[in-house]
Amino acid sequence: MAEDTGDSTAESGDRATVGSPAALADDRRSADRDLPSRTDRLTAEASSVLGGPVGRRALVGRQRFWTPLRVILLLAVIFLALGWSTKAACLQQAPNGPDGALGLDWSGSRQYTALCYSDTVPLYGAERLDEGAFPYKKSWEEPAADGSVQTRYMEYPVLAGLYQYASMTVAKAWHAAPWLPGALQVVLYFNVVAFGLAVAWLVTVWSTVLLAGRRVWDAALVAVSPLVVVHAFTNFDPLATAFAGTGLLAWARRKPVLAGVLLGLGGATKLYPLMLLGPLLVLCLRAGRVRDWWRATVAAAAAWLLVNLPIALAFPAGWREFFRLNSERGADPDSLYNVVSSFTGWAGFDGVLARGESPTILNAVSLLLFVAVCVGVGWIALTAQRRPRVAQLCFLVVAGFLLTNKVWSPQYSLWLVPLAVLALPHRRILLAWMAIDALVWVPRMYYYLGVGNKGLPEQWFTATVVVRDIAVIALCVMVIRQIYRPAEDLVRGAGVDDPVGGVLDGAPDAPPGWLPRWLRPRPGARAWSAAGPRAVPH
Image 1 (tube, rainbow, N blue to C red):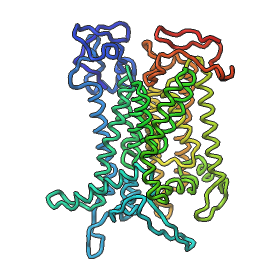
Image 2: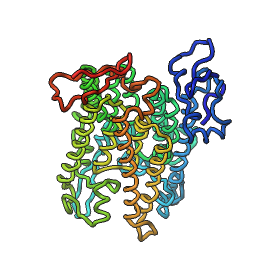
Image 3: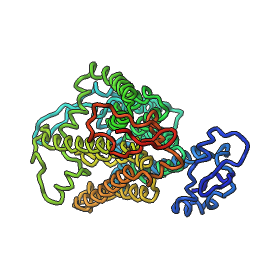
Image 4: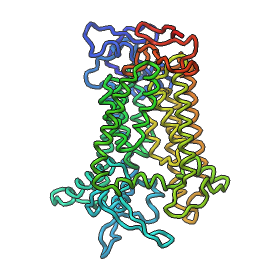
């Protein structure tokens, strides 16, 4: 894409320098800004549509309105609109109700054949939101195939459940207003939910732009990701990515308490933002800044408790439903364990389970594998010659969780998008992975359609899952390679240490004395300081 073509710089090599006496809001960032239309072949070719690469005499950082942030947010709005359009086919109405009343037209398995399925539509009735019920208080009975009956409640973490309740309230108020355009309540509900999710994804993009530092245009990959088109409105995950992104931004701005509060709220929406505290722990341990980590962690725990405790005390059975369901559910179709079962006929670690019986061995295996991933990431963080960047370790932990977990719902891939862009800003590689991941949606929908209904066999779907997993593993390998070869890290150019590091950015290594030698940086390691690299004492 084209850079700020109205800006002008004097050029020294491939780096733009400010050539105007006017003051900049951020002279260093503007002067050192990466110019992808010059340095990246893919962006240079794409920029030809808008006039070609930025000129050598352009003043970078002087555009008053079309700043990089606004351009990237505009791109995000366009791709979010495309994402809404992919779900629109599931909002069609038909006179298929009693006495010809209007209802959703999902005839012919439209939700699968049109690839428009979204959890938000069936959940409106399944979670009893259509009855105006308050989540976690309302319960209902579901019959099982064996004739037993099970009591069910809202199955989402507290903030996600309250978001659904608030969206339902707005949709019902809209529906009751005769002077507003009318539609089915569930359609109004979906659109209210989608609007909030779009705002949340814009916040995710905004935070990524600010976290990208001099490589501000890398954040455009978050805005134009194919995964946004497919999954921005599949479930409620953009709420969690917004909390995770702003939490990391607060950490980068050296506000650990605010960072902890935001990550804690994210954990009350989806659990994954709390995982980001793990990489921060080992990096703070290596830099001797554990006090800042404790401040963030205590704040995260307090925020999580503040949201969860009232619901847990008032409606304990409803609050536990999320944890109960996740304990009892088996291997998800997208999980590594189901892939093995699909191709081998393996019955799984626990064999055939009765309704309500937890797959205890599967739960233990997936937990142990994730713990092993965390231990490996921690060892890399403590022993690498140069301290890894925060985004690198966060990406490895979240990717490791998805690869080892028994559940990888397709929209979970949104969690990786901003972290991957910040950890490994190689545009063609990331776009290739995102395209592969987004395309998994097609065989998934046709697998759910069923072979008897002209759908696809399970192995067609699980084969694409294997390709997706290999792509994510390849990204992890590349991140680890750059941790051990920091000279190949595109982010650490122009004297940059860690744009997301906050108190870690530019800090020398100061591991505590009680750490054993084999958990310290390797001999000859070079620690970063404000004056540049220096040797770590041993």
